[in-house]
Image (cartoon, rainbow, N blue to C red; front, side):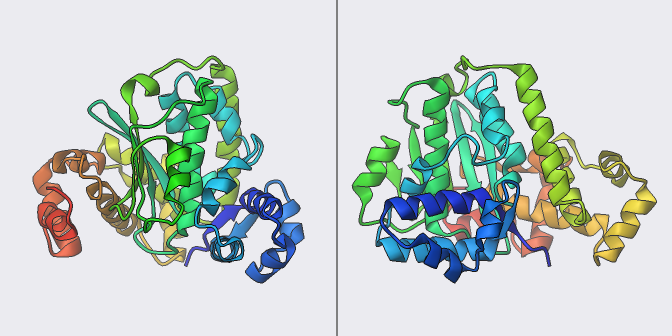
Length: 338
């Protein structure tokens, strides 16, 4: 089973926030199982389970159900490797968010960030995996706030606000703090975690645009991710599949080429991890289907396209095999509009 990890600098940001709140950060880090040595490595990573525990302990110690929002304010440009540099050098906010989505696993591979468009609305979605460790509400709060702070910083306007924010967490006592942070309608107990932006803001040109610097930063991020996943062929294949699926069903040869190996080598590596290309393709599609269907603005035909199916009927047959339901029936049962 894959051991999910989080960039150690996230823990350092939490530590700074705890110190500013007057809490004993050293004790809490120790209780969570995080060492000073681990945090001092600029490229180090922490077990996701330990980070989840640190979030829980921090919320309890501060008694602040808006703790995640405060953590976002303590993030520095160097907190997430070259990710901030890549964003800052982007042409538009859309370009910046697409880069974050591509390289989000630099921050954590325990969950994902997706950026999609529906009409004139652009959505940054924070996605938990179909299986594994569910993110703590505070970590989602921090990520959502950081998305908004990033947009304000890149556009040089602190008054900028998204159209709306939806969070799966229960409504906090500190609702006013969330309102002040996001400056837009915020709903709690939602079916998904998302931040919705208008097209005009998303397409606005960024003054710091620098294509060469953006490419260099992305190369650094790609190298770092390759180092994380160098011994995990399953993770590498799933990442390739997620990238290739919107262009049609990928072949094993295409993925092998992306990973700079032969088809036979790829088959051997996957076999050593007790899986196969066909199984990973099926599992990846299943998990992505559940994530996309949670978004009511994403039509069934669009989900089929994003998963590389030739048509909606093929997708429907596959989804019924996975769940025993059609995509429409699944949406109806989960309370989402079909």
